[in-house]
Picture 1 (cartoon, rainbow, N blue to C red):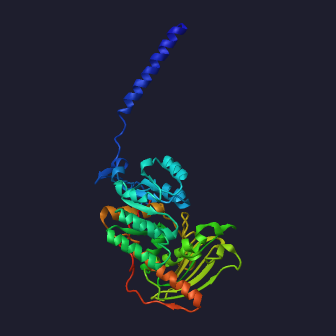
Picture 2 (picture 1 turned 60 degrees about the horizontal axis):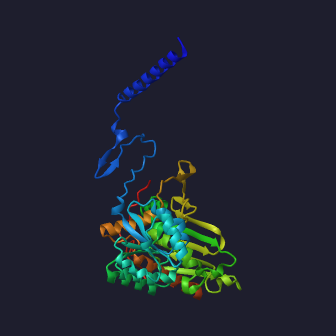
Length: 426
């Protein structure tokens, strides 16, 4: 057999294999219901494919179609917006970014190009009021210095847009109340961005605290400290007119609000002490360090420390009757964990709680979107922010006078909050 005939036979054999391969594809075993899943109410669902010994798979993501998601305008393109919020929107199921607002034209143009925002939906602070003519914008997320929150909340409300506002709500309880009133007059929703109340590990800890899973909560310690650059006085956070205060309203607020959230109670007594290094220009107008203790109606005592002068630490510990709960990175943007120490038989054991918690910013934003879509009151409405300002003012008073400040009891749990949020674990 010559070479030409050998090549012909080889080609014919290869073709036969290809045909045989295609034929076998038609005889694949039919997939099972476990593998294929099913569609229920427009959502794909799968039956369990692991035994009960393993952690079950989370629900399959079911985002709304893009045209049905709530459109947000982000007001302010600082670090939080660029480093956390814009990336978080990619994980949102019910919300999308449709507009940007900034006082820096060059930055506004660059960010709009990066995220595909129509130049016509890019606004300056001066042209902000024209958002009323953009029906794609249903809500604004205000990410500006604290003193600007009231102005832009009132302008957004006047434009008929719902408001999600960063914490602290403003610079005083009086300013915060004006924000609530403006949104009530305009019949728009106002939510304060207390992301910890939408974070999976803190939500689980709140559930256990309120259900007395480990017996009575006796006490809690909460620390939120970080450092500031040597020329930090240039930052708006160190100008009292813009910030309303120093470490307390910026990062100490996490200690205060989380203690209220975990217990569901409101403090009835506050003691405090404040310190700032003499001659340090960073703390000429605002405090460096604040320590305060909260007593709740159930006699839970919460000791809090916040400072701009100590290396980053965001830890909370809850001392229950039968267990200790430790949360390193409790107030961080990511990296939360939870360790429970308790007796197990004749020994003491530490149990790591492992959750597949969603991005806390995405959960927070989606909750606001759900409230708009379903016409519900947000879990953290403006009244929640007002109450924190009332309590921070009491903390400053206690620190200034050296005497405890007693507060009128507030009946019931979650007195200033709306219905619980539904946060789907991954």
